[in-house]
Image 1 (tube, rainbow, N blue to C red):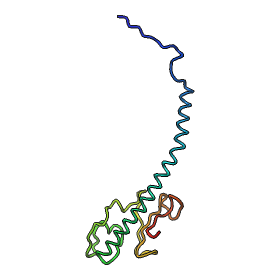
Image 2 (image 1 turned 135 degrees about the horizontal axis):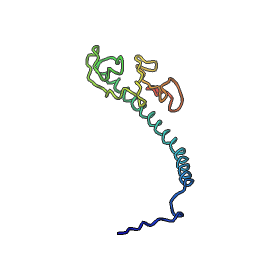
Image 3 (image 1 turned 45 degrees about the vertical axis):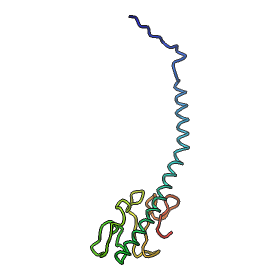
Image 4 (image 1 turned 90 degrees about the vertical axis):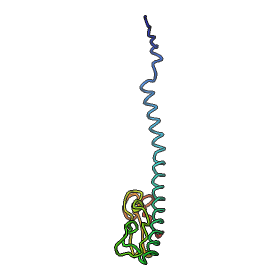
Length: 141
């Protein structure tokens, strides 16, 4: 049983190193153009999610007020019954809602500077102020 192995001619061996490198460069250029747009949209979605969560927290604070006659001392009071609040009928939100999309606690002030209470996030950078995705997200604007 002699099996003969046919060898392909050297001219049909496949891609050259230069051709492979050229394909990799083209793929890197395409990724460089597409990825920033995708990442920017993801950050924009986090800003919208934070705004929606702040609205939900604001409604929960108002419901807490209707039940107890006072605003909570902290957002944690929306999840765990405080000893000083009679009429508490919570939890008013899930504990996971107390953190913004970047994993930081929402800021809460009662009484607020812009109303009965203020709820806000410092945005993507976690610093007060900023522009774009780094701008503060607030309950009063």
